[in-house]
Image 1: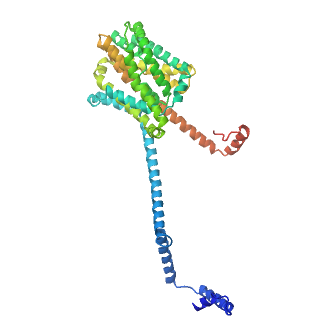
Image 2 (image 1 turned 60 degrees about the vertical axis):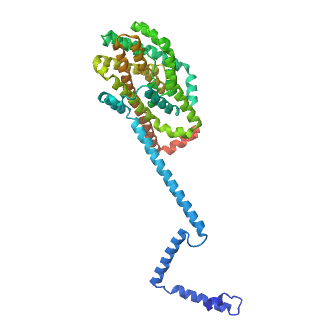
Image 3 (image 1 turned 135 degrees about the horizontal axis):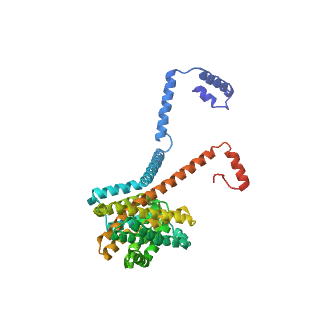
Length: 435
């Protein structure tokens, strides 16, 4: 200690000599090895001091350190919870997408339940069906925008083509199929009545699942429903030999409640509450699938005895009618030069009819109860065929996207990609050759 005190006084007469002695002493101390126990003690002390500093107990403001520690822990736990929630949300979305691809499976299960246990689905009728369809249309509306409907209205030839196919293809097919496959005139009249009905509201749900044009589907359903006041009685008179009046006010009210108002509410929800619509939209397709499956199950449960008593010829006739309707709508639309998305919409609108309206009209204006049987079977058949077609188109879209992503990745892995990309940018001025 004396040596240290002398060295701290550079102004003294002996300062230089003591400085030299101090330097020599420090050199000898560094050269002298320390015992292992001292090294261990120092290492242990360093570890304890490091832990204490981490806990905020040594040096500085203890309260500030503990507060910063708590804030960092809370922040880290928040990010962990956010990451976990995001992972769970992605898993839920993928699960919904996977279940949506099983649309035909759900419809088939609903048909089995309707046949085996009709009482289990007897509650799903009337107002329950209306509310379920309205909620489904609300979920569809949040995926749309006002500009989508503006684009449809700017192309009136699409609307005209869809309505023309609706009231020419299906009535003609129904008349021909009834003449060829059905010997009973009442069943043939019922099949013609199905073909003369407007597009059904369930077609909008199937269009949504098939990734077709929902605004065009909603517009076609609305226009064909209004035109049913003239077209359905006229066509039925010429093809079935009986004039049938149609309740225009009732049809308009039903279309307004089930289709138009829910879709408009969904569009407004997306515009003014985008966070809510973004949270709902991933699960809307699965809700639509379950709704259609419940509708099919309920219809089969109510008409199972009639379906079994009708015989195979009527079932085959109804299947042929709707299959050819779907096929004709798609082929004629593609032949007219419409896009894939528009052609899918036309196919679904032509192939799916408002069979519930047919049942009501047949029960009210025909004395023979057999006239209503084709309408009841039609509700099940077009839902099953439409669900299978929608699942097929959805699967094809996903397969195409996956194939394109794989080909793009393979192209990027090409050793000549960089040279090609530089040449492409030099010639065209674009950023990336793959874009």
